[in-house]
Length: 315
Image 1 (cartoon, one colour):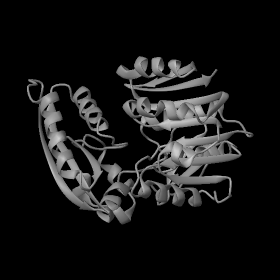
Image 2 (tube, rainbow, N blue to C red):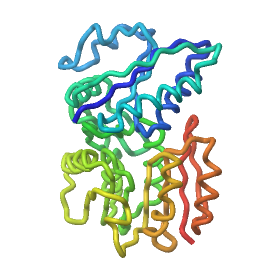
Image 3 (tube, rainbow, N blue to C red):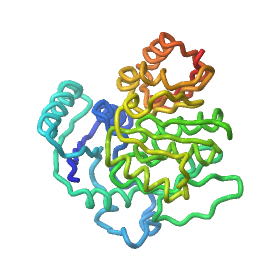
Image 4 (tube, helix red, strand yellow):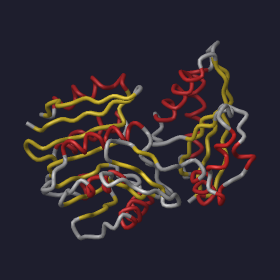
């Protein structure tokens, strides 16, 4: 599979604020992760902490501020490029506090994976969970739950607030007897987390066949091969019939949540829990109101930066 790399080089009066605005603009187009390049202001000894297989001094010394996102190259690519350019011009074209340049590059899948590996490290994302890339070494503490992950062609490394907020809520609500479904499973990280938390049956659904293959690979990496764990390709109600779950998780964009909410509500058991993430703070109330109309009652809100995760109970 070929990919399109979209790189925005920028400078701004308020770097952090504008960086987050650019990241959020990319999230509007459905990416689940971005790469950040920043001029090096850290201890140069950090260079020697990078695995030798990926060590390249030219890659480490970064002179430009940049945010990079990756999209699959398909029939929609040309139209997507036009829309992205128009959206960035709409958001940033008349700004006095920000200058930017946006570029598009074709990238082979293996090049993307190699690039990504240089920037992914072992990270503790909650009180109990640690996400460890397969190519890194890590000695876990006795109370830690370690997720082995190779994101490969799918996004979802666990380090973005949308993912770890979701997992922190899963820690609170998933019990040993529970059945769980992950809507928009991506890399499968939430399925692995559900297994580590003791869920007895776990399903994952995604419309992207590549994501489903990566999810299956990551389940195997974590020793999850039982018949009670399934990864299904397709739309939710097309692949899940006459079945409801104790816990439903969905780490997807707010607009997609709103579009799928009626279908999602049909697979939640009475008194079951829905965990939603991927919601920008500005759309929090919109999502909550829509959930209440589907018979869901708000239980908890967690926030980090501009991102929000919700837990709700089906009445």
